[in-house]
Amino acid sequence: MLTEEDIKAMPDEDYMNDAQLEFFRRRLLQMRQEVLQREMDVKERLHEREVFADPADRATAEEEHWLDLRLRERESLLLRKIDDALRRIESKEYGYCEKTGDPIGIPRLLARPTATVCVDVKGQDERVEAQYRDR
Image 1 (cartoon, rainbow, N blue to C red):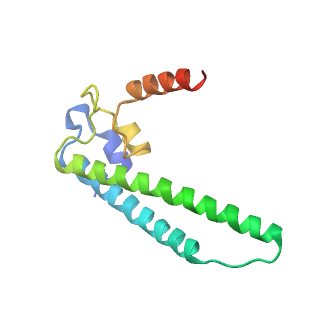
Image 2: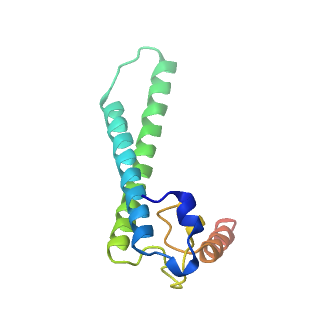
Image 3: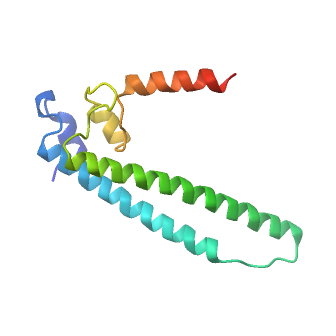
């Protein structure tokens, strides 16, 4: 099994060969298991409903409940991205920018295995989003 160092050391011609796809498939499957475990933990906490007489304790419990709901939503989004990345691996589209078709790059995929666009496109998208958000 390849390591991150092995992947980084491969020549550009080997980009997204079968060994690299398998490396990222395993990494995504591991991420998926971790997300599912965290999701189960959150579900358990959400089903624990305690009644507090003290308003401060009740407020703290409500805040924790709200944070758990938010965490569950974020984990659900991540799970969908992981599943999408696994589908792209199966179809051999993984590792290439959805907008330009250019390679996303090993360093970016190691940092964010669910990435769907190259760093240049992501930067452009973020700049556009920041312009509209500031208005």
